[in-house]
Amino acid sequence: MSKSYNLTEEQLNFISFMKGNVASSPNLRSRLEVCLNRHSDNKQLKESEDFDSQIMVHHSPKKMIEFLSLFSRDDNFKWYTHKWDMSVPFDMDSLKSRQIENKNVLNQMVYPKKNGQAINEATYNQVWNFINFKSTGKFSWKNNKLENIRCGWYSIVDLHQKNTDIPIENLKLPDGHQFKDYIRMFKATIEFRTDLEENDRFSELIYHYITSILPKDFKVTFSESFDEIGYDLNIYCDVIGILSGINIICNWIVRHKAISSEVEIDLTSNDDCYILEIIHCGSHFNNIEKLKNPSGDFENLRKRLFSVCDFSMIGDFFKDGIKHGAIKVMALDKDVKMVAKKITSCEIETSNKEIGGVKYQLKIYKR
Image 1: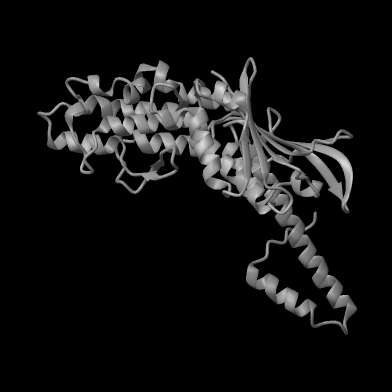
Image 2 (image 1 turned 30 degrees about the horizontal axis):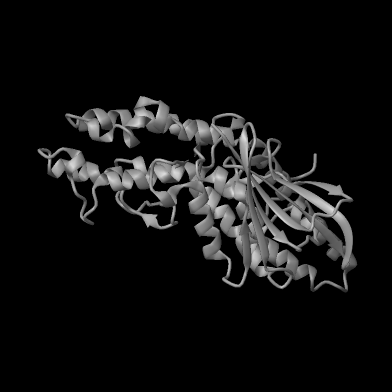
């Protein structure tokens, strides 16, 4: 049986040093190389075993919908956003007891005990940081302007304890706002709705967000269907996740402005989903390996949109400056999985048909 070589960093450094200084002794150099190689093999084996022992979760935007819809269909959660001002009397002990049970329900949806579907941890944190009674204020959530908000349920709980004779709907927070203002703000981050403020509607929010990122000298065209469909769109969605993904895409486009400064935005409606398409006209891909095995911003985008929406890219492909048709990158679909925060590689399809640019497609599922 071969021995296991688990060396400390100090031992490895010493062996590496000796290996570089024994050129006159090939035999000793060879033995040192064997030692280093065995350590490397054992390290890779351990990492592989650790990876295999982790729970595998599947990309599932519909799990996100199940999670967020709790705040409309389940009385234990609907209370936080719909019936919060009807809690008379305000029974703090009962609410705190229920909070433990509620957290257990949510935890199972983001941290499953076995392989299966799971929501995005960022989606969970956004929700929990708002409904948490015990937050000390150091945890924040984002509104749909991507501003950090430090006012949540713990704020009104603390305020109520000091003013038990005032109904919670009449309480004012130190910043002068009523709590209903933050209820509305939070609801606009877990749903695209038509009954909030005008700028919370899908078409209005996405329009203003994209045009705020792309420079003024860009020609940005929104299709008629974008306005027609997007204005009345109602879906449960991690709105902050979608905006974060759009931010990365728009910054890619800005970095490739030299190729083209023309962008088209389209929105279509299918039976089970909406597809938001951001098209960088005249652009192209030139490195398949980077698309197959993402890193940097592309890796961050996949992690942020994991279990939020499907994401794909299709565009013309250039190699050594010569056109070679087009490629489609399936970055997030039903076959994508995550283990230990590492996402499986992207599937690539090739086509002889040119696209005329690069299309970034976000598939946002309906209820």
